[in-house]
Length: 97
Length: 483
Image (cartoon, rainbow over the protein chains, first blue to last red):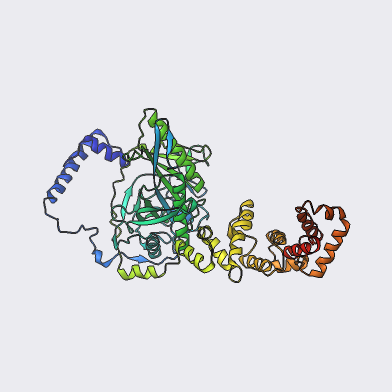
């Protein structure tokens, strides 16, 4: 399996990353190398192996917390890094469907 | 076969599948400890996890998991003892992480079914494909500023259950009945409050049309439908639009459409036209969700009586018709109201008064049964006053009016307004004597016009302000006038 220039452009677009022509070429090479390596991995017969979803043992199970309000309530901190804010709201370029 | 839409080229069948997003009732969010309460000051219920700050890690809320399992059991669905969380990647300003934590290939709940109630007691089964857990997004406001949108992240990260039906519905009525039933089941389970106005329950409707017996047509997804009424309007509009388009030689494109409640129309969404490519992958921050059978059985034991079972019980215990019981249980609060009101009262009368007088008054004043000025206990007392003959049915309506206005106890209303039924024979007899004596002409015509008897009953009622026992009046009049 391999990717072409159009695939790279599409992935960049979906990821909201702008790439120059040079960078596209570079990523095309990089991605194809990665995919080549994955192709190599798929040669191993994993027919009878369950998929691994985490490098931690799934048998321990997910850690759960109890349902109590223990966070939030610091609006100024939350919006302090926003490029633009007003009256405690984040301001973003207008998006309307 | 009333479900068919008639076009120029013949009949068309509508095929509907629904995705419901139901907000889980919990104190805190799915993966963070911020509050979920509705209507708070914007951005005050936001933790660094909800704001998508780098390095923050999600920790799952155990109650949200239990609520999803409980809902699954209420939908007669298969609970998956192993499920995983995936990242659904897309960019939108109200999604600060850049992805939504959701479940894609292995959801927490699998196939189930819901029985919906249609007109004339007809039932239909709608299959559930799956139910999965996911995070809600924040909220954007577009009308506050000419060139910017405001973003409030209070809702960001609140737990949702996405419930996906199979395409088993074929009319607006069926889709509405499905949403009503789903909402009702979740209200009984206390897993979602079902409030569509506040957005706790939102529906995306998939609509396609086909000639009967054909393969499924291309579907359009209608978003933003936030009331049962709008669901009906959106489906009817959309089905007609598709039929018209195909009959004019056009082709339906799979797309996302918005419902505009002001125009009663659906229109294509501009921005989401780009092919959905969410690049799902398992979220490396979260381990798989696993359950034991004991855990599932423990939740099964906490299940309350669900509407279909309650309906059967009301029929058996209170001697109601299946139809009346269906109306009562279709809203949990109504059924609760009924059971309290009929605790020590004639249940059939209570049921008639709820479905009749109470509903029409509440509708007129745009109130829910929880806001009823008449308490269930007081309605029960009113029924007892009718049942034991203290007041006539006619006077009961007047008492009810006063109860609606004042919220007072019917017993004190009857006492303070002197509304007790007059059954005392002596008293009634003297009233009747007086009427007979002052209306000799009517008495004379009675032989030719037996209908005039009604006029005499009316006179007695008028004289007693409706308080005369109708049965005694009839008996006495018959005795005096029909020799």
